[in-house]
Image (tube, helix red, strand yellow):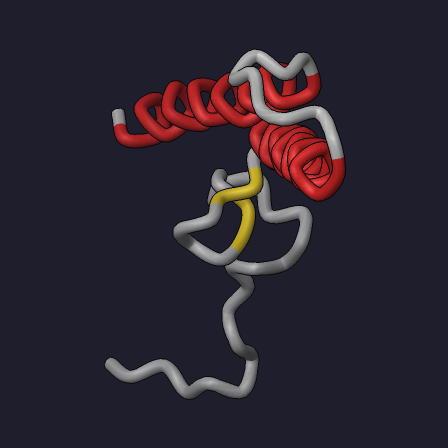
Length: 91
């Protein structure tokens, strides 16, 4: 259940980031179009767009922010959940 909530929240946040980038690129907020504000607007729009694409990439690949690895423990392609061979099993 928590995995579904994280996926829904991740999709929502990708939409927010990419939407904010589109709003800044289109000057929806009617900020000044000269000088430093123009540069600031485009830089912030690029940052929102790049971070939205990064979040989308992580969402599609299933990388989980909260566990420090891949979201699915059964799919251990990166070796995050391998047992330490040097560790002695305590009975």
